[in-house]
Length: 168
Figure 1 (cartoon, rainbow, N blue to C red):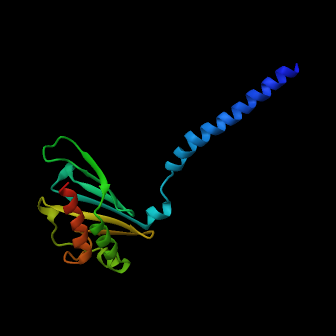
Figure 2 (figure 1 turned 45 degrees about the vertical axis):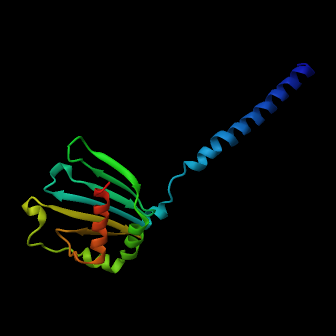
Figure 3 (figure 1 turned 90 degrees about the vertical axis):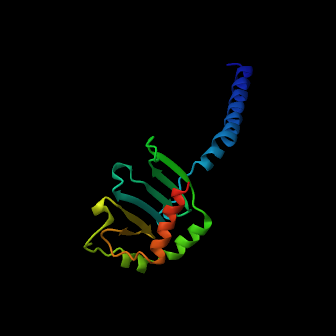
């Protein structure tokens, strides 16, 4: 092998290393920084999933709200065109109110199982269930089956989320 061939190989190798480094730093590294998964601890701090059941049959709406206030709302429009998923962020006023009423003691009290005498879903009405995960603890509040206080600030705040989503 001649000295010229060795120099050509070394120059090609150097350009390859510098070119690859440049492409990595300008192309892949910023993308990797943006495509990070959400922190599991942050997501487990608060997750709210709500489903309706009863008279709405197969077209019952539902939503999910996570710790940062973002939501996913799944529903079927009144014209019956098919399921629609809306995503966004709850207004800051609703987020603040929701975080202020989420108290483990109140959630535990309203999550106590009861035997209802009548429910809206018994007569073709709609009942709602909330599955709330707060700091790793799960609370299930059901308008037909748990000891919910329909006049409590917690229940009224959860209802205000439904009202907001239905106006979208």
